[in-house]
Image 1 (cartoon, rainbow, N blue to C red):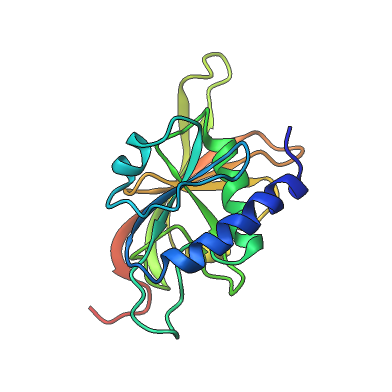
Image 2: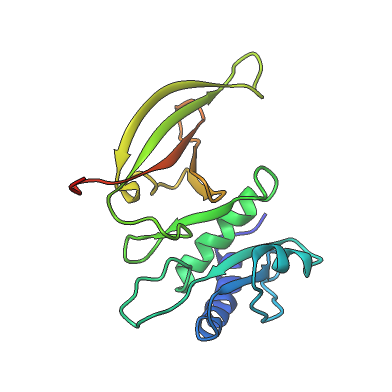
Length: 192
C-alpha cells in the first residue's frame, strides 16, 4: 500500500510535467500510478492517452491557458498532484471511467471544468442496500449551490464522469453513502 510520501514523490514529477504541458495547449496526459513515469506526450483526448498506455495510469486534463491570472482547474502544485494521484488509485478498481476531483490550494475544485462558482446542483444521496449491496436506495434529494463547500474531508472521495459529480463518503460511525451532484444549469443568485 502506498504512503503519502510515495504519492508525493510521483507528484513532484507530475507537477514538473504539468508546468511544461500547460505551455503546449489543451489535451490529456498519462502518468503511471506505480512509479510516476510518463511519456511526456500531450494527447488530444483521454481515449488517445488511454490507448497508448500499457500500465495503470492517472489521466489528467490539460486546460487551455488564456492568461496568467486564470484559475487552473487541473492539479498543478505538488500537494494537488499527490491528492489527484491518490484519488485516482482509489478509484481505479471501483470507477475507472471517472476523473478525480480534488480541492485546490486556492479552495477551488480541480478536475471539474466549466462549472462556475455558485452553480446549482441537484443533490441525490444514495445508500447501499443492506440485504442486496449492489442496489442503492435514494434517501434524500435537494438543490445545492457552491459545491466547493461539500467536497473537502479526509474520508471523502470525489470524482466525475463528465455528467455529474460523485462524492463517496465512508466516515467513522456512519453508513457509507454516495452523493451525486448534477448541474442544473442555473447559477445561484443570478437573475433569470
